[in-house]
Image (cartoon, rainbow, N blue to C red):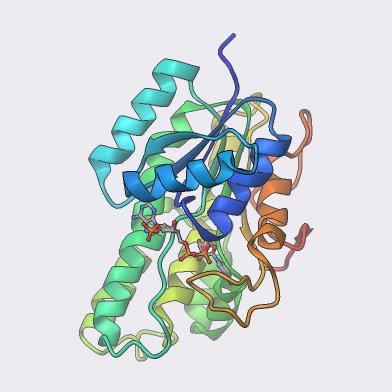
Amino acid sequence: MSARVALVTGSNKGIGLAIVRALCKQFQGDVYLTARDVGRGQEAVASLASEGLTALFHQLDISDLNSITTAAAYFKDKYGGVDVLVNNAAIAFKVADTAPFAVQAEVTLKTNFFATRDMLTHFLPIIKAGGRVVNVSSFVSSRALNQCSAALQERFRSEDITEEELVGLMQRFVDEAKKGEHKQGGWPETAYGISKTGLTTLSMILARRLSKERPHDGILLNACCPGWVRTDMAGPKAPKSPDEGAVTPVYLALLPPGATEPHGKFVSDKEVQPW
Ligand code: NAP
């Protein structure tokens, strides 16, 4: 049997690095810190080594399809697949950023929704039986959901929304933002929030699909919020340290063998949240 392996996207700093740190301590198998920039990734691996922890490194830029497929082929070849995948990489414009909303919508959705979806498209088929998939979303995913029109909320909450329909809705948000028509379209003024509404909804869709298509594999897939965490993204005033922010993602990544839930849920502080 191949060795067990866990990988975390965007883990050269912030919450991703803290997730790798915790997995190095708790996961029985190889742990991969991945980063789009090799130098920043290797520096982070070295910083963990100075704490006495061993993480391995693989380059992975989730916005680059070639990087995704190269990494997926590597893990398939070397480990027969992946046991734990944490989709953590994301971007956020600062509140003070003056980039037009149209640009923020396109750029934010590109990484946080479309690129994360590409990761899931290429990695879900190689998640091993008993695997755990964690999508790091945010509490703002449900806040933005609640600010959407009633018609959009109904679709995001429905059990029958397909991946194709969701992708169409996310593309519609970007297109309407570009035309300055997103408010008429029923969307709130938050690109980051909608990118995460999309990611949480996608997690629920893919979990339902896994249950249907691989019912005996016992894979658990969830979205979560790490809380408000002191990182480059959220700034120094947030209450949680990165290690504290890692607690819920790591809890979901290490749900014990044989567990049947949570699955397809949005989880915060280790508790399933309403959607
Ligand atoms: P962060 O400190 O800004 O770290 C983000 C990480 O993602 C960095 O390693 C960054 O790499 C990486 N990344 C960005 N684009 C990438 C790409 N295309 N390919 C690969 N890696 C990429 O942010 P954070 O606060 O730790 O956030 C981690 C996750 O938690 C995100 O999903 C975020 O939305 C979520 N979250 C954070 C908070 C919070 O309060 N901090 C709250 C709710 C949810 P580079 O160093 O190369 O830029």
